[in-house]
Length: 301
Image 1 (cartoon, rainbow, N blue to C red):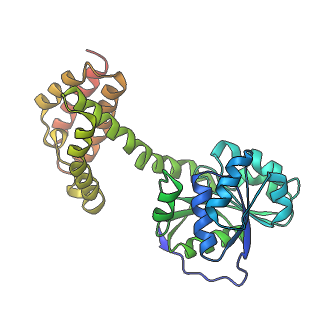
Image 2 (image 1 turned 180 degrees about the horizontal axis):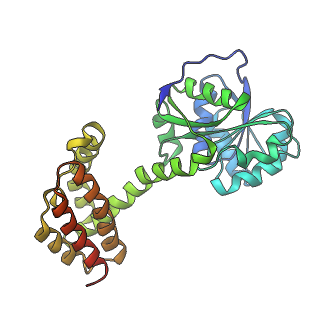
Image 3 (image 1 turned 120 degrees about the horizontal axis):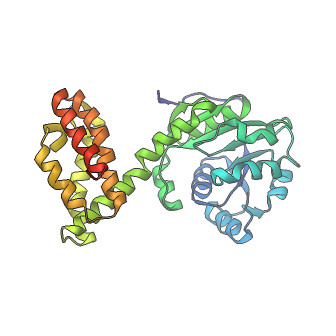
């Protein structure tokens, strides 16, 4: 359950460094730098990116290499791609001892920081449950967002400090449950983008230009999201909720000429929509007919 972070700490982090120079690194770095946790340096494998990130975060921030960063600061925020964290941790562990380290991955727990924790450093995960398309958007969207924390000790306390500074909500996620948590985040964010793209393509097959389709679908998407979050018991509408088999058959016929990924997406989402519809009053016999139609179409029968 999410909760406001209100804890206060006797040992605040006065300054820290960032390993990484991407959107999350820049957004979090600038937000925290402006709120009193001074960023002294940014490191990246690409010196140019490190310099750009340092300039974005604030004046006086240095651009360093990873080994230089580990010898310069005792507290480090690792904000690199999920697959790069272990490699970066191994580099930092060559010089960092008794330090405090956070990573911003949604899928990894503390195990990915093993090279550092084995050297006496405290490690934890701090994942912003937010989509950040640009650093500038991150400055707007991160404050007030929910952040998941995995780990304990000094690093987890620092993570809670950060959530508190950003006036966010906090989720405590066990390390072994991070993959499940992250899958939910991907479905709620990345897959929504893919679903909208598919809907725009289907509108294109009906003769509607992409920009026109996006404008036309926007109010429908907004209302659907609002209903799903605010009144989920009544949110579902449409042919599956009504058990309209003829409508579904016509849909499948219309999708036949489109890429198979869209056809499969419609059927897969339809299968889960049956479960939602059952909770909203769809009769089990009607649900069985809808399922039979979707499965039959999937087999090409």
